Length: 98
Image 1 (tube, rainbow, N blue to C red):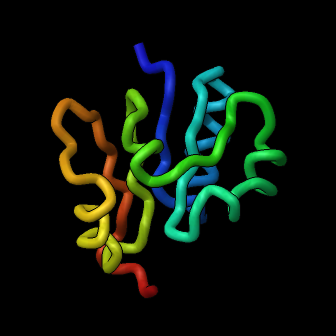
Image 2: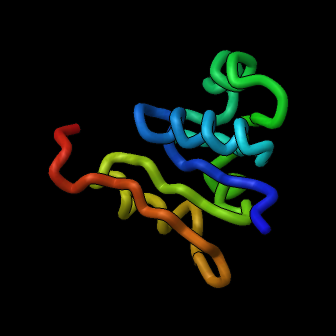
Image 3: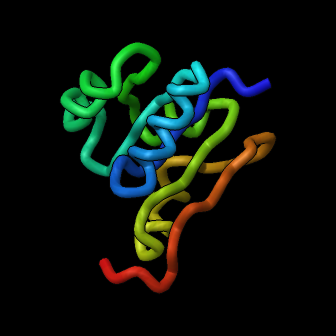
């Protein structure tokens, strides 16, 4: 059973995923490239069950959703050195313009 979802990326894909997870009473850790302090307004708006964290903290969740621009994917290797044992949903779009 999934108790937590970590979302790497808090934009147009990450936010709706967070809303749906919270609706299902699954806790959410949101992260972005600017750091957790930039997510306080969004987390407050999402309410109970939502929190902000680093990319590494989001990657520790039961289910990880990667929702960042495709061009930023290589940079994840420096923040999350391994994905061993992780369930990851890759929601990037290589054709989207950044």
